[in-house]
Amino acid sequence: MVNSDVSNKPVKIWDVISGPYPCEHPDIDFHGTHFNLCKVEVNGKIENIEYFFESFDEAYEMIKYFSKNIEPIELEVED
Image (cartoon, rainbow, N blue to C red):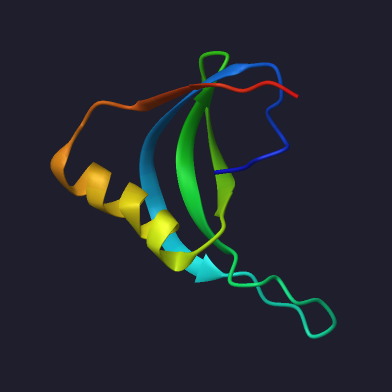
């Protein structure tokens, strides 16, 4: 799971708003990369942020987690 917009900050992912979506561009091969649009808390503020995964299955695991849990996924993001 990757997101370069929130480096060196603790984050809590509260939910998946939508996804998983394939990364597509006519000139770039993303090799099966998918992303979820997530509701994320960064420094006490809620933002919508895309998180990228190496495959559909990895992205879908997050969907399955939030279908059964209300606790956030807590991450300590470092460079």
